[in-house]
Structure formats: C-alpha cells, structure tokens
Length: 157
Image (cartoon, rainbow, N blue to C red; front, side, top):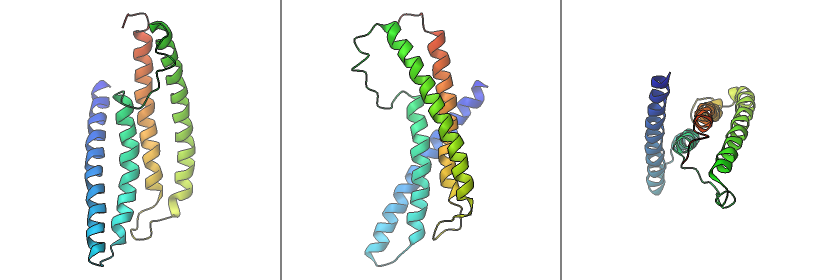
C-alpha cells in the first residue's frame, strides 16, 4: 500500500509540474499572439483548466510536505503534548472538511457535466473533478498525518 501511495505522490508531483509549465506556456503564447492580433481563445481555456488542476494538486503536495501556511503564535507557548493534541484536532477538522468538499464536489461535477468550455469541447466537470481528486488525495495525506501523530504522541520532539 505504501508503494502505491508513493507512486501516486510521484505522479501527482509530475502532473502538477507539467501542468504548471504548460499553463505558463499557454498564457505566454496567448500574450504573444495577442500582440500580433491573433486570437486563440482555446489557450486561455486550457490555461484555466490547467490552473485548477495545478492549484488543487499543488495544495495536496504542500499539505503533504508541511508547507502550507500555519499560524503557531497561539500554540507556540504551549507544551509539546498540547501542541500535538491540537494538531490531531486540526487533522480531524481538515479531514471532515475535505469530505464535505468531495461530497459537494461530486454533486457539482454532476451538474456541470453538460456545460463545456467556449472554445474547447471538454466538459467543465473536469475542472470540478480536480477538486474532488485533490481532496481525496488530501484525505489520505491527512489520515497518514493523523496516524503518525497518534503513533508519535508520547514521543518527545
């Protein structure tokens, strides 16, 4: 199971990085072509599609790596044990919030299945699917963080 998760993490990083490169290229190409009065509206639509996927997958990558912004000014002065307990509570809240994102994201993706982009024939629900996939991946990452927090709760930091 750990190999599957590690493979998924590598695929996620590669997809996010590749998507970001193409996002930048599409926006840059669109700006250059607009300078020459050539309109390619599909560039912007593809850039928006890639933006959603890279943003949500990037959020999971940052969450997994502990690189999301955190405010520790409140917990900094507390004991290590209390800090770990608060972290576990936060993991539970995050896990359930992600569950809500998944449930309502599935509902939204179903409603958006008939809507397409203006210039490319792909359903808009694929954009919403990025939130569902990333939220599910973040649920797994959160469960792993919670498990590690429980296992290491009594260990000194």
